[in-house]
Image (cartoon, rainbow, N blue to C red; front, top):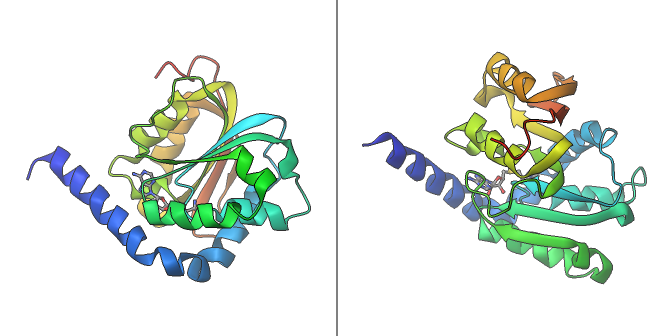
Length: 205
Ligand SMILES: C[S@@+](CC[C@H](N)C(=O)[O-])C[C@H]1O[C@@H](n2cnc3c(N)ncnc32)[C@H](O)[C@@H]1O
């Protein structure tokens, strides 16, 4: 089988996996994901900006923010959630539909992280929690996300440790960004990496 086809097959397999488990996702992963958000949240600036959540799933991050008193969602100008699974997005939508003010700020987009339907330099903050390890080419997917970020934007990404070589990831990120924080805790199954994109990197990839 050709390499490109293997990539497409892996992607549709992953998509089907999330479609099939979407109804039990929150029950199984809510507490685990909330622990990651707690680590991430202190560094995110919510100042009239556009946040893109790459691989947003069922919207647990927004749920966490609504429960959290630490940060105020009112300051988000726009939140764009992207996911390849329609069922995950439908669950997300059903949660925010109950809140009119919140739903006005949220756009959900069915798309593949390797081919984002956005112009370069259109987003202020990139968030992605436990999503990139699903991609056949993790680094290319992150590069595609960086393409849509404005200059010097900040990013907050987490990736399952067992699915990536940390040194390779850091080497790539160091070439594109000023890294602010790398969180590698025993109790958390992801590396969490936060940083600012270097001026020349956003939109020019
Ligand atoms: C482990 S879940 C994480 C969801 C969410 N970020 C959270 O914190 O709960 C991974 C998500 O990535 C999505 N995903 C996997 N491959 C993707 C791709 N190629 N493009 C967009 N989303 C993808 C899945 O559908 C799933 O919703």
